[in-house]
Image 1 (cartoon, protein in one colour):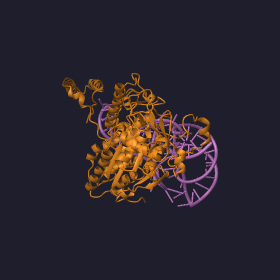
Image 2: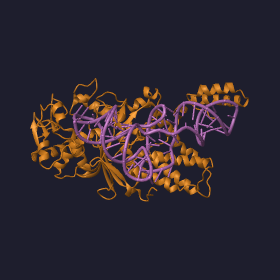
Image 3: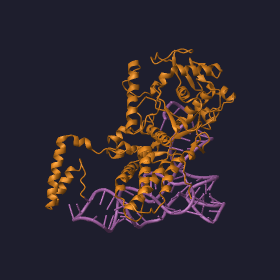
Image 4: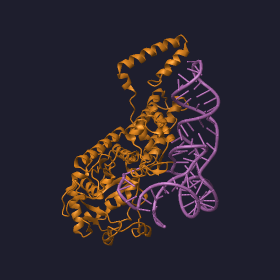
Length: 485
RNA sequence: GGCACCAUGGCCGAGUGGUUAGGCAAAGGUCUGCAAAACCUUUUACAGUAGUUCAAAUCUACUUGGUGCCUCCA
């Protein structure tokens, strides 16, 4: 028998990347949750793989809020780029105006995509460029402790010194041996002392206009410094959850941890629980900007892709498609699986329509509380959304059987199930109901045309002229679907 | 080379020790003028080998095949 959970809040288990184990989730401060997720770097449109992380943590955020935790959710915006080659835009020359235009373009796109995927805004969305002073202060601390060195005008974090001084770079999240022969064989140590030493202050090159003054000359802070500084500033030097894609584990998160431990003079490793979402692959290859095999959400929505047979896909279906797979498992994009999500979506939301057909009885055939608790149990077990969806289908199935009078349910229990389905499908999974194609009807002329055609069709049907009535239905197929009662 | 992960029917995809999602495709049914939609029924699969157990798709070990990270990445 599975345990019945009366207080879901105290029974959450999370897979912690630091220990590679599922651990009971106990917030640092009772009833408060501080959560940080690495946001986008604005050098291109966000692709479907990027969206996965944001959708997953959106559900984590929604679930915590549903459980009445006080959640502070911070997701940064990296609006600065160390390597300008990353910016993939033909019109770009590194003039100030163009640079800012491009950052703005991708920023707007990012917000738009997140909105149509029904992702809630975090509490704070700090931009890297707005916190340069704090970053310089943090770099000063590292330099002062003699754990950094200057090379070619840039400042590097000295891993060897750090590790000698009780540090553990490479081992916290990744188990990477920084003296591994394979790496030494394949990489060249032409710039830094140690191959893994990472830049914390990058010297201004080619008279780039994006730069700030610092004790080490003009330049920009290193990428990892942004996240350490922003999380520290808004959530303190030790907070509950730090999240991001699994490809950020190394080196990004490892660097963040080292910096934070030095700056704060502790061994807290920045966050208590580290969560990493797995990759989205296409043809079994990781989707990424550098491999140029990425898929943009807009192209799916607008039906521009072969993988969806050039059919337009509702963004909420994309959302469901992504959460159907557990966050720690790879998703391989395929035609069938998107179609699958579409069907699942329809049948999940159909619940709210067909539930009206149920005729309640004096007794229920099943203990409804178990069905409800199983939903909470699924999410409590390391945010097992696929298992949750499975349990939602169980409820859906039960209702089908009540309609067919195979099983029965009381009024009270039915209300309970309606409530739980609403909480999980709409509030937590964020699968809000699609508005029907009303836009077409707004155009009055089309509306009246369709209406009069329907009138004609009904008359023909009455006269049993089915050949013509079916023709009309076929003609109108692209605009409306006609279902005879 | 190191570390991490994955393998489920014709296909896509859940399944976290016993009851075996869901969808596509196929067949039959309720309904129906035919359809559509909805619902019901049918088809039992877990890479291989060994082990633990009364019981393994699920736990353990090894083998095979694949993926990710070790360079910017969600």
